[in-house]
Image (cartoon, rainbow, N blue to C red; front, side, top):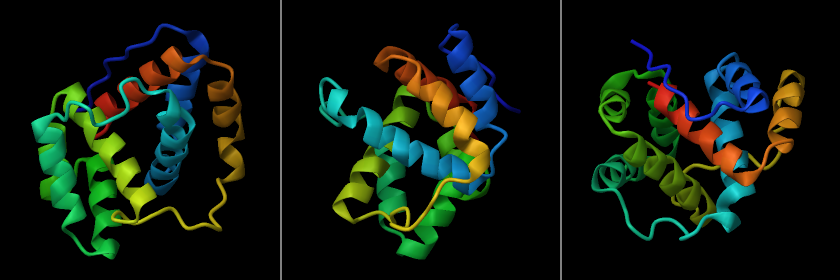
Length: 152
């Protein structure tokens, strides 16, 4: 069952959300990574000042895996497959966001498998990227909330 709750009423952001879910899982992961890089310096307080315990638990499960399995765990979180995907599905919105923020930080620190440096987003993401560039920080956060709520 897919949760379709959204946190935004901005038509541009809603269109970006629709587009986001048309992309394959790996493209969604890359867009989440680039989205994290885009907003991380504006987060106040900077994550994880108050860590959601369950979000940290899921992050720790992913971080404990070999790098190759970390990627599959992230895919499973998006699709709801496997043990980590099912655990992720049971999280509330705060914990889900915490997981992705911690994963982004882990990628920066090298403890989580990173998007390859030569990775290029597919051409079909151009409309999505342009839509997200048009909205302010608050709407980008609302987009992230809506996206992570629907995953799994």
